[in-house]
Amino acid sequence: MPRLLIDKLFILRRVAFLGCITALATLAWLPANTMARTALGGQVEHLIAYLGTTIVMGMAYPTHLRLAAPSVLLIGYAAILEVGQLGASGRHASFDDFAFSAAGVAIGSLCLWIARARPWARPIARERA
Image 1 (cartoon, rainbow, N blue to C red):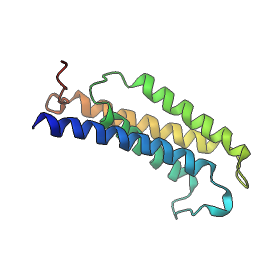
Image 2: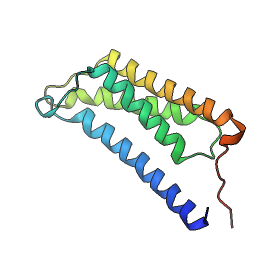
Image 3: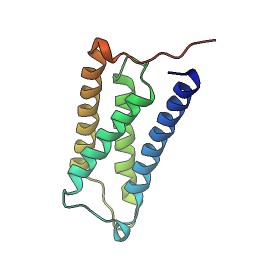
């Protein structure tokens, strides 16, 4: 793959991760009357959102071998967003929602760990100048 294309993919993945982080904050702190829920329910929505964000995080930073630190930071971010809902109109903080968010991060990290353990799935390292 040409180097320019690889560089653009790295940038695109990192922008996607930033978009996920921004979307999580926006959706967490929207007033209750502007929220539209799916048929899955709020807790499954939390699990899917954080699982997806964790996978995007792993794709944005494929050369970082350790997943523990970024995963703990993402779980901390989920806690901050959950507590921040106390200030949003009509919203409330819920430990159950936080637990499902943390479970999404854990499942996503496990999926990344399994994928990275495969010898044919090694990331393409960028050349350092």
